[in-house]
Image (cartoon, rainbow, N blue to C red):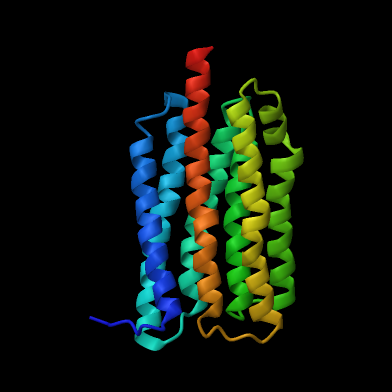
Amino acid sequence: MAVYETADLTAASYSTAVFGLAATAAFLLLGTAWVGRTWKVTVALCALAALVGVGAVYEARAAWLAAGKVPIVYHYVGWAVSMPLQVLALYFYAGREGKLGIGLFWRLVVVSILMVFVRYLGEAAYMHATLAFLIGLVFWLYILGELFFGRMDEAVRASMSDPVKRGYFWLRLIVTVGWAIYPLGNFITSFGGYVDTGALSVAYNIADFLNRMAFGVAVLAAAMLDGEERKDG
C-alpha cells in the first residue's frame, strides 16, 4: 500500500475528493426516496455523476501515487461520462416544468460528449490544439445558450415553483462559473506549455466540490423544497 507524505497536498486532495464524492453519491441515492416521482430521475442522474467521479478520482490518485504525475486521460474519462449525465439532469429538471422535445435531448447528449472528447483530442495531440480548444468552447457555449436563452430557460421561467426557479439559477451558475475551470485548464496546458506537477490536479479536485457535489445537492434541495411547497399549497 502506498503511504502519503505529510506534505503531499495533491494526494490529500484526491482522497478528499474521493470521500466527498462517495458521500454525495450515497446521500443523493438516499434522496431519491425523499422526493416525488417526477424528480427521481433527475436526482439519480446526479448521483450517478458523483459515482463516476469516485471511480475517476480514485484511479487518478493511484496514478499519482505510482508515478508522481497524472496523465490527462484520467481526468477526461470521468468528465466524458459525468458531464453529460449532469447536462441530462438539467434537461429533466427543466422538463418537469414544460415540454422540451426529444430533439433537444439528443442535441444535449451529443454536444456534451463532444465537448469533452474534442478537448481531450487537443490535449493528447491527436488534433490541432487551437482548433480543439475553440470547438470545445463552442460546445460549452451552446449548452449555456440552451440554459440561459433556450427552451429550458423558458420552461423554468414559466414555472409556478420558487424552489425550482432558485435551484435553476444556482445550477446555471455552477455550469457557467464552475465548469469554466475545464477550458481554462485546457488552455493552460495546450498553449501555456504547462506540465501538471500536481497543482492543476488539486484545482480540479477542489472544483469537484462545486461542480459535482454542490450541483447534486442543489438539485436535491430544489426537489425537496418543491415537494414541500406543493404539499403546503
